[in-house]
Length: 431
Image 1 (cartoon, rainbow, N blue to C red):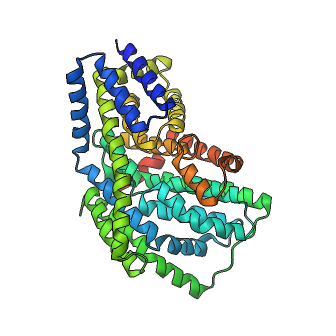
Image 2: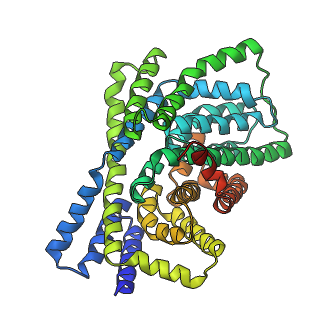
């Protein structure tokens, strides 16, 4: 019976996507139709609605709107330009220095804001014109900005790791945050390697030399922004507050900092809050419908069927992990990250746990994997933002993106088959 439900679920979902129905509605409708196969209409509708409401009744999820609000404040609060100036001090004199600055600034801003879209918009709007003035191709600048913006989804604090914690049944958020540091930094360094090779081949210039006095000033200017990471992550690890409480502290700290920089005033707050509400509504609707669909799949024994199918392919751990990665890479092309994590975590997590994999390690694999999809058409939100900021079309950016895709996938494979990269830091600190 579950095979019929799998066919109905997949075919209905794909049909709705082809028609252009928004993904949250596609998930909700396909889940409800699948449930109608097993039970009467009234219980089916009320059960799905109840599961949506229950999914959103979570203290951990309250961190998402707070981190979104903190990201919006950072985007307008003058923090991006200070991080860019700090990155110039560190890497600006290297070959292809401005590309390195772009990547490092995205890593820093993405880590602080927890949003790839905000990072691509904020850093790209500053760096693309500057790189164009120095002779860099806009397509290359956009490719660097698009791919490096995704590193902030792995480097904590990260909204998507909070979503994974919810979908996995309560994996420690603090442990996930710690696990994301090395994979995120590794991804950034690998992208720098690709950018350096490209810059060397194109003979792009190095950045201007920054004097010692000016370098110290820019470092001190960026310190208050960087200190937010110390407060949030340090407080969570030390046990002073939860991730949700940390998100509220991040909002307060960012608001005060933005006002000190005189980039945000009380008159700006209504527009910032309105944007936050809009983004939060979209994210939480996706969370609600995705969790409803996850319950339907569990009710129909779909995860067990998929698990049996995967284990029937091979009993080799490496082969199964490769198959899962290929499936997630394909899913990421057509589905946004939040619903993908919520839907596929209950399907694949039992499989990898049976193979002896740590759920923390698998969470990092999922996020790194699905980050690639944010840079690909047709639903790659970061791709569209990066192209819009650079004022180019998607066709122009594909060629310089390809080697960076390859680099991201190589890092994904390394993270997949070397669990110590993700688990060393949580283990070191007792998580």
